[in-house]
Image (cartoon, rainbow, N blue to C red; front, side, top):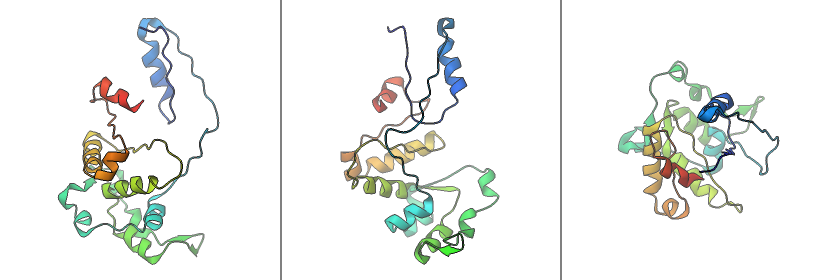
Length: 179
């Protein structure tokens, strides 16, 4: 077994927690090295950006939450206000989103994860010239499993992507597939 463990990651984690975890073994000290900048450009898309770019519209059964295509989150702070209802498609007073996007976003339940939209995004990513990995962050094991099942039921996505579930309940050898 190697004496030194090196963890290289590209997401925001509780650094102190990781440091304590690895330092707990044999009382070792743990160094944290941080490098600024990104080796690859990262593009951020918000819900309305994806709905507009993909001209995505939920199917009727998706909006009703039937057939397990959406996952409703447990009650929480997001239940107090549905920001989707207030979406007007404007930025700085200028209309930048189509009325179809405004209508779609307003009709989406903010507390539901739109799993079919995730599948649509992954189909879109397949058209990009650069290849790489895709991270889909979800709140819990049930949502991860439901999303993975939906993605693996799509023949194109199953063929083009290796769907790897990462969660504390997944055996380490399965999680290692992500590396």
